[in-house]
Amino acid sequence: MVSLRAALEMAEARELDLVEVSPNADPPVCRIMDFGKFQYEKRRREREAKKQQKTIEIKEIQLRPKTDQHHLSFKVRDARSWIQQGMKVRVRVRFRGRERDYPDIAQDRMLQVAHELQDVAMIEQPPTLEGMTMLMVLAPIPDKKK
Image 1 (spheres, rainbow, N blue to C red):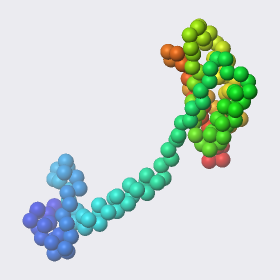
Image 2: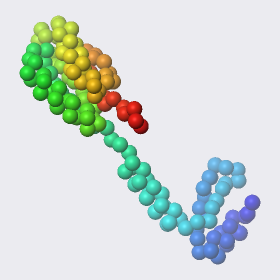
Image 3: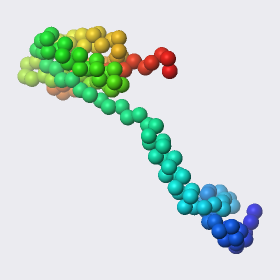
């Protein structure tokens, strides 16, 4: 344990800074270092960590209970390409008027979409009814090689 005055003199002799590392310790812990260099390296490590992060984008396809098979195939094709790129896909069925009385039709549509995409996607969130919409989230199947 070194006194504060002696630590400051040691830092000044080396032309470095005295930095308090752990103020809550008893006694407080300090280090002699170049504080500017320390801050620079810390920012650099944070930038590198930010580059390594993978952001997951969520795309959405919107359907209606009356969407015919032809239009549904276009939506499924788009969803397949997004999932293969590593994105998640939210499938939304919007109800209007009395369509809300028949949620089983919408759920069948969603399960049909999930069945067509089962080779590349898994159901992350099963179909749930929220007000005038029904939602389901599909996520890419994690690679078994990793």
